[in-house]
Image 1 (cartoon, rainbow, N blue to C red):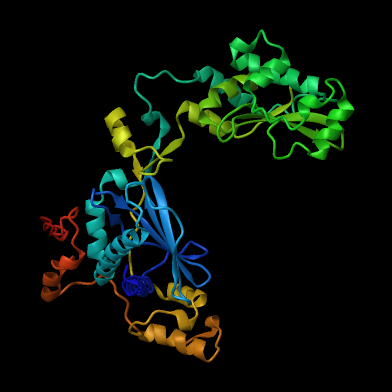
Image 2: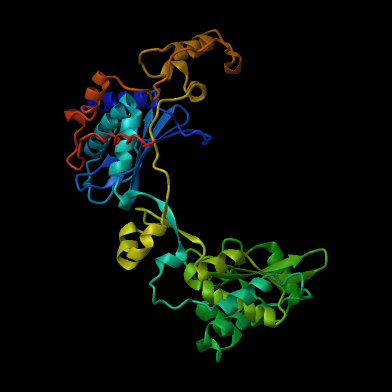
Length: 435
């Protein structure tokens, strides 16, 4: 690969980013860049972040992110992740193609932000947008609820039993396994004929941290082992295995009163209904428990919470919802599409704060930038730079006839991509209102 070509691309992208508005609610200086459009028509978000005088670049492919870092001081770059599936093994070619297209799009965006942003909004396929939808609309119409409404209402009234039930005065291994057995019997009828330890071994994570090696009925031994935390890093309380975690029944020791209670929690949605059955059974046996995130579990089972929609593997795919529940598409609440706009004065100041003057890109110096640079050069603190800044910003305004003609050529041949129709998106004229 031509090293000078990559350096030239990175240098120009950095210079363009220095003119663009970063996200204002982030601690780091962070930009959402233009979409990279693959040859197959996939719209891929790009992101840029400045950290310790390094430019971090991220390309968020549906099947895996890729990233690289460019050191603004040494001018060296490093590819920091494997390439996405289907893009071969030539990282330099991949990044050259991606950054070349991103550079052209970023140049077009800053040339005429309003037209560019409207073009993206009009042409971005719904499959590559992100949003939220109520979970009930993601389920097949004929699917029965995982849990009846009467059970959920009962749980809402009694999800915290720790303060209503007397605390356990002592706890042994046998006591803990007997408590877990109540939960097992409520959720798994096929385990009822087994002994408590057999039930535990059949469903638990298996990494008991030495608990099963303790004397079964020695409360002092259990308390000492519990307080030593020799079990830390193991999963003795994961009574139902799940990935990354399943259902947890964790003992809680109150050293002031020398009494015990339990925390019940579930971290795998497929186990929510089983864990609710466990909670109700434990409460019926007067076990002092606190069901963590009970409201969240109820909302999921009831279908009143929201599900993320988008191209990420962690989200519900738009195509899947379209096939399963086409009538539900109108209920999606779409996120705003990120826009690319020129920087505002306060964000220019942020850039100057994190990027030393010697590393800032070479580009025409406006009056706005000159004020900041002159203040830096003589050591004036940023908050004391009071000079008037009068350089005009790129803002929307009525366009001249010449500019209207140039608008049609905004996406020139250099930035052409076969997946884009390059005709400009021009708003329809407003009709005169009749009096």
